[in-house]
Image 1 (cartoon, rainbow, N blue to C red):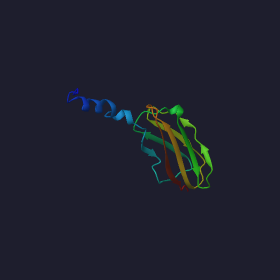
Image 2: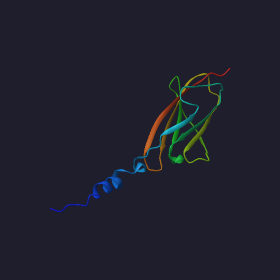
Image 3: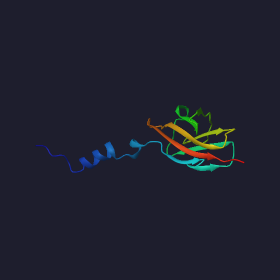
Image 4: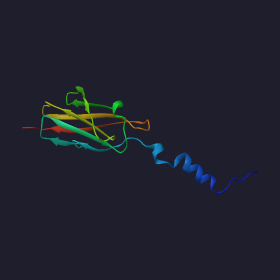
Length: 121
């Protein structure tokens, strides 16, 4: 029976499973508005920042109001490769939810939601 050197198993673990980048997903780390924020304006500037580079052209942002009506958001250019930006105007007072879906540069798709309330005078 042939025995492998003692360093073979740790090296195999490092090469096959030890790289954090191999399991990276784009995780939302910051949003404007913040989750459950109260916004004092009928125009909402949105910025969602992720922990890794995303493929912005393959990502989507939609806005859902309290009645369940969904509106696609037109994304704006961002100088950061890990950020999505959009603006929603003429929003009535009430509860909203931003639904995001992003494609990370590693090929993984992640999704999530950010809730906020418009309470403008």
